Image (cartoon, rainbow, N blue to C red):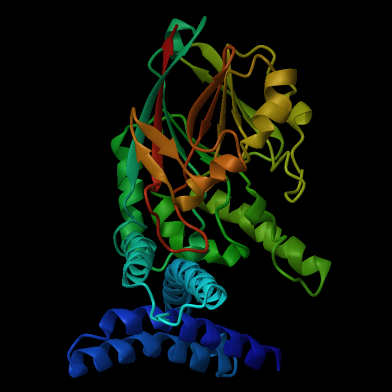
Length: 406
């Protein structure tokens, strides 16, 4: 009953939005006009059929289900903008009608404004085209972001250290496998001394990573690959029948890191000796200042034993951890590496001009390099995607940080 009610509301919404297309096409030749109408109604009817079909998720594979959901999402986001202009036009028509009746005029034309209709369709076409292009062109368009960080009193032995960071792979979202190998090629082309992975290997279940083990196990670095967990790695977003099942999933996820050859740190640290100098790589479990995300991280525990290191680097999935704890309590941690935000997979970035995404209203630090005092935070935009299988303006990222003496 709820499903039927929901479908009915959606079809009424479509009927209202249809007024814009009918107004636009009213002067067209009949065959073209009817073709436009047919194409318009094809998508809502397909969506209604899909929803009424018993258990669509069981009848369609992951790729087909994801693409259908994406098409519906893009179409209805676009129609929502069109409807906004139609609503403004209806307010204009009602106001004009009321004024004419009050003033005693009889020459009222109830026709829609062609200008507002065309503006609505034009504005609605922007997200339709951009979101569709983001799916077709950008999900595997891996982009290298380079930064040089100058650190006071950096030992000469660590000058020029090359660190590659990746984050938020979300293997469960990938629709294709072969293009993902290009990200590994890009990583290895940088000849990194160290590679950091800052969490969210999967969406929910550990076995999502299995098809990609032979891809990401090719990541190589002179001094190793180090990883931490993200909020999606704990299995918290799945309804488990028994606690033992969740624990088994978590253990499998941890074993996946081992199979990849990645050194997973669970509130731990690794002391590396590079050219005679000690470098501490500290890895905490997920820690967020936002209430909706769990706090598994224990930085005090992870920090223990690193006091003698010449340089301390922290891997912490959620960038809100930086201001919440790191810069206040651990001032000798030079750089924190985070991810989590994905840059919302949507925004505008023109280097030197503008960097904007809606996620900035949720996270103060959401993409790129930030500094407070002598401490730095780098927020990776993510290698994969979640939900919407594409990116608009915010490309999937491989980060190369090179350390220099200040």
